[in-house]
Length: 469
Image (tube, rainbow, N blue to C red; front, side):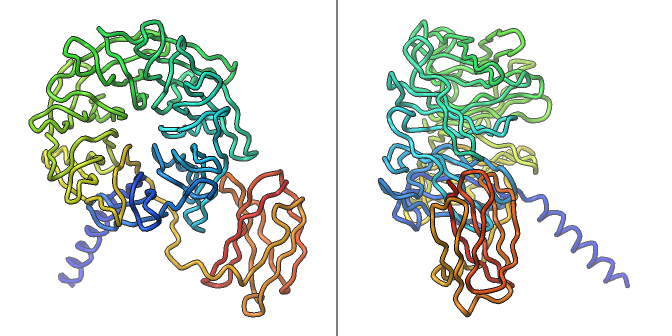
């Protein structure tokens, strides 16, 4: 009995430890098992379970990702959104969705010079259920745009076209503050030509420049602002300040007050990254240069005491020159990725244990498995289908696009006991239909958009995309 009790305690302990291991997702912009255009991947926090979720295979005119940028945005446990920098029918960037349960990738909107091109940040899923993002070029002045995309109607709207006065070339991501407004940064332009911090009020459709960056307080802002627990926004500039190596700053959305908090020296040039907040309002971040090996550092900054502490010097053998921020996961450890270094110089995925001050390489990038991770990782527990998707030619759906009526034909081998599940662009199941014969006339009485048809028979499944006009 004693041994049984000990075994039970051991099994519970093992389960608890495994339950605490975070699942991390990210994107790589190069390599992978497709045609070398990057991938969407996941990895466990202990370094196990590296999986290429979706290899990118996009070329101009081909509706698959090509050099994905930023990171994915979970909308549900089985639906994510993202952007690629060179996808779409024009090869100038697109917005996509990916259903992890059905493994269906859908290009939702292809960018062009008028709508904005070359997105570089991560989409924001805002409180109004719309996606907001930035392109670094395109628009009337070819200096980038701020846009909104409605995933339910597939409507893309330009909200602001950047220029030399309001800021230009935003290579960053957006964040929604407690006041409901969206905030972001543009890398250059503005009164001093060194970038701007701006807001967009989604309730009044009002764009406002709230700060003009300068040499003395930091310039060339990249990356994403952090919305902290105290309501302030924190960010970094790539260069500027008295050291010239960049700054850490705060912005108060309630008072529009910008404060230069710290000028970086031991570790400098934070690039495309943002800060992560830990207990006691402590901030964590990375730089792409400086440190003992000139390859950047992981740092901690306490805004309450203005104390900066270098935690780790990146090195070429174990990953260096990160361009994304660190992620503080649910297990209390920091995770991130570097662009370069590692076994094949395609970057690494790493962890940093704050309790032991231990840096570990979890995964080395390669041509075969993808490399050049330019942004942060996110913690995401997804429903992922690991079973093979069965042959699509066993099922035909016509016409596609459809005016709302389709004909489904099933081969004799699959027509018995098949359930048709219909999901909309938001990942919501809108219908479930039992098919009774190998030829069914079905009315799709839904709003216009892209729908995922999943045909389920026991442990098998087939998927189709259909456009309802």
